[in-house]
Amino acid sequence: MEQSTAESRPAGERDFDLWIEAGRAEKNYWSDLWRYRELLVILAWRDIAVRYKQTVAGAAWALLQPFISMLIMTLVFGRLAGLPSVGSAPYAIMVFAALLPWQFFANALTNASQSLVGNANMISKVYFPRVIVPTASVAVSLVDFVLSFAILAGLMAWYQFLPSWRLLTLPVFVLLAIFASLGPGLLITALTVRYRDFRFIVPFLVQFGMFASPVAYSTDIVRAKIGETWFLVYSLNPLVGVIEGFRWAILGGDAKFFTTGSLLSLLVAAIFFVVGLSYFRRTERSFADII
Image (cartoon, rainbow, N blue to C red):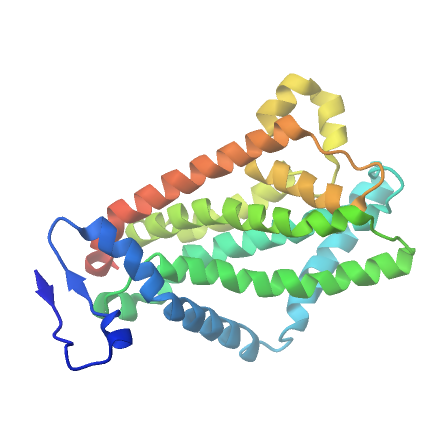
């Protein structure tokens, strides 16, 4: 067992001594997460600065991407295919209410998948809990998420659509979206370090997942087409419950909240989180050797 000598320092500074103790790695690891909390903020802020300073459009790209996606989906599915909206809500607002959590999930998964590889030099030289790196990438995706609310506010003003009291519950579903993103993000991150082919697989998963999730259409259509039993199977997609929650909070009125399906989505998100975190912790020791 090793401990840095710190008797001459103030008591507050001695709280940050680093312990290397055989057989106690798990306990020390989780306490180190709190000690390195400032590193999480530093990495997230660095990624935000790089993301917006080195792009031509800057922060405008975070607004243009979901706005263009909304226009295309509204034209194709709302106008050409004639799919109905949820209650009296305009189709564009219904789509954008689902794009908010979906874009966050897609950005979080994409950023997290390359986060460890992108910080290879730091990981191979400095000790810190590696889970901080993909977590910081997920935090960066929150910036785009917050900026996208400006488009939602503009759409509501354009269509003169006023939200109900349910909008106050939106932070709960934002936390659920973060929780649903962390599990797959940790799993894909760890797999990408060992198998670099996953950098090609992730974009395909994101593209497929957008059409497999009720982004451009309502869950009412899916439930009516396949029935309640198969809809429960469909709800194994953790984004189904998140998207339903966002629409229920934003659209209000006739928007329904399918409790059973949402709880099933939450259960799957919890399983993904446990599996992702467990695999990440099991393979974390080899990251510095193979990255």
